[in-house]
Amino acid sequence: MHATDDMVREMVHKRQRRRRALVVSLVAVVVVVGAALVGAGLVRATNTAPDKAPSRVPADVTDDKAGLAASTGDVRIDLYLDYLCPECRNTERTLAPELETLEKSGDVSVVYHPVTFLDDRSSPEGYSTRAASAAACAADQGRFEQYSAVLFDQQPPEGGPGLSAAQLIAAGRDAGITGDSFESFETCVQDRTYAPWATYVSDVAASRKVALTPTVTVDGERVEVTGPDAADSLRRAVSEARG
Image 1 (cartoon, rainbow, N blue to C red):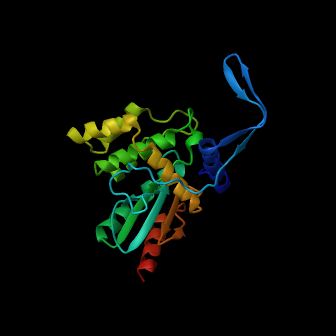
Image 2: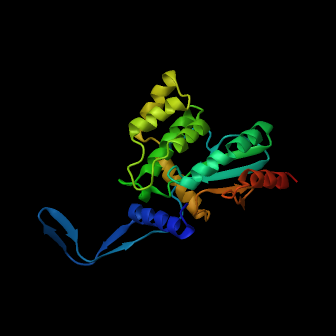
Image 3: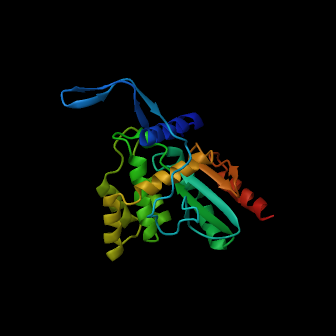
């Protein structure tokens, strides 16, 4: 089952509190066995608005740098997916043929948002970010959608470590990245080059009240894509948006 809205919101806010927390010391610092312990401290989260976009972003980002554009057209389709989310895997598989058809029509802008809401669901934490960063590396080589499909085909179970760096790199070959492009991709994955960008994408999504994966919208209106007629629902929504 996919995570509920409340569960995902808590995951996002928890990560934001950790990253932005400001510890206010209320008493003297006590040093015990070389470890500095702050006496009763107040951890105060800052606002949950996204930080400024990182300076380095992958190829084909949207103008707001919070998504990857796979095609351009008058009707916009936004897909928010987490690589550790089982329902996202089902949605990707179900919608892939319809999305390919729509992209070829030239009438739609398909924008992917690889979010990292489920970072806390891997052990150690952080697989969603590592996978999203690797997918952004694949975008630099023009193979984002192919790579995403491979990641979902090889999706690890929640609670485990996720795919290793070596496995994420090997997935690039399965996605069709070869030659000098593969060397660049490998370095990008190893360096986790786009981890800050993946965090930014997730924070922007949360600020837009997207707290559930998968989420698919057509011109800003959410489309139900977890039922048996997901492709038909998407097709109808696009047709209505076209007018």
